[in-house]
Image 1 (cartoon, one colour):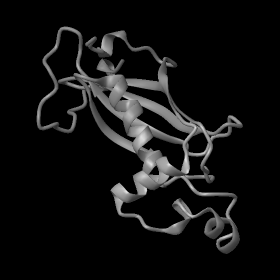
Image 2: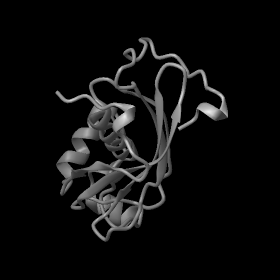
Image 3: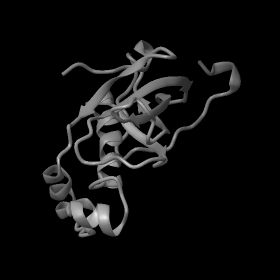
Length: 164
């Protein structure tokens, strides 16, 4: 398994996309069952459309949240840590869609023990519309530095003269 190091990451670098789908009602229902979310909008098409006036069976927000975490985890493994994630659900995603989770490096920060990577990220639908914009901060070791501490410790920032 190849390791990712702070020294090798550049601003505007793209994180490899995570593509999921097409997501069927069965995928959505299985996730709902695992999460014990029994709302009928996640498996009952007539209920979702006729009762709740939705465009179809909705993909769970928690499933989309998991896609964002998987994107980050897959990129930084095995030696990085996800520190902060923030995103919004701005539009619905429905059964039958293929979702593309993406990320891009916005900036880099050096701390005393490791580097922090600030990312813009989100999920796009089949129309290439952003449905879930967000940001994240991941911690990555320096190429010749120590491994990241476990348990993860919040960073100690260096002075402005030492920031990348």
